[in-house]
Image (cartoon, rainbow, N blue to C red; front, side, top):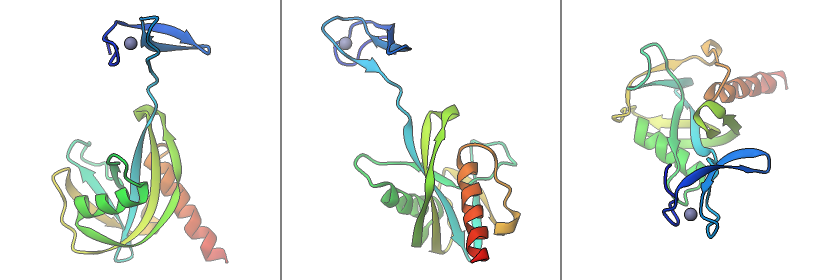
Length: 163
Ligand SMILES: [Zn+2]
């Protein structure tokens, strides 16, 4: 960002509360580019007793993950997740539970993750080109981003088995 979106003056590095920020040069303007993380919804979609792991067209061939999406302006995250499940998989959500919220520093995002039960017939949208239905016991979560949500989801299943 070279120019201030409020007053068009140059943006410069400025030390604010001990952190270097990109900020407007003008003394009449208080604009700071905070780079706040973007919220993202993630859905661990259960379909016919298995978890839908989908492949995004932009990803390496072997990488499959849960469904994710951005929020529309003013949209509740739970509503966004139901919408994304319909858009990306053509599935209708019948049950929804919040798993947790996870910082994802590499992408400057905060992931709000849900477990969903869904029904219908899977039809992928243009963002996805393949999917797998994976048994819960065969899921191997990774150590960042949506992988952390999968870990917590699997841990919650083990807990409920012990009761
Ligand atoms: Zn400015």
